[in-house]
Image 1: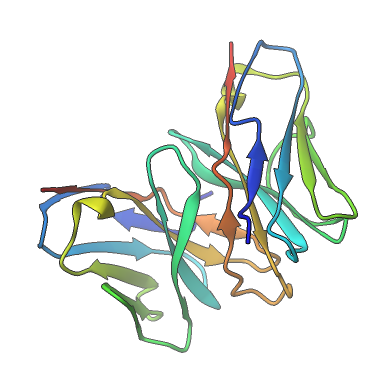
Image 2: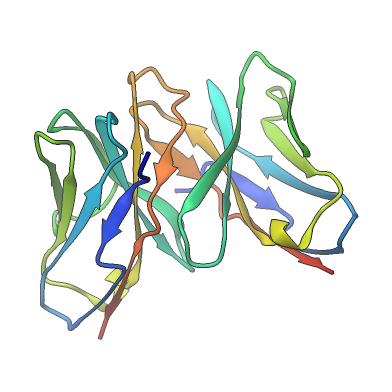
Length: 115
Length: 110
């Protein structure tokens, strides 16, 4: 079974630009969640999608958005990039019953650098 | 905000030694998970322990949970160089939403 695939692996952008990151979950997994990892703030939850619906959202500004397609693939978008958006963005998938206790399977991440 | 806080921040040991990492959290939980991350890569799930469990084993891993103290520990026995990684505890808020601690960096030297 293929793992969680994130593309691209590395991305360099300049301030003010926007970026779209892609995530393909493990086949059969309907939940996709996104996390931002920085040296200062650690791992922080961005949002979670299940069957194309956002079920939960972290404390991030509206510049961060996401969506999920009918095949469970997900994208996240960051508009008007700031230097502080430089981070490793991690996508995770799970079967998710929504009751908790879900084991998450992570992709290798997209390393975004904002110059 | 961080729910879990790992201690120590960094740990350096020799191969064959045991490594113990601790995690404290703030609010009541239903379960707690531990993950490993090799440098700059994705996280790998290690073990989940539910709030009604006190101890759980998986291979060379032993996890304990003390809900009265809001703390958990991860013990890796007979460490290997390949165990070198960062280890995170995470509490579960439902809907695949995990709140991670800042992690413990473990260095195992040959």
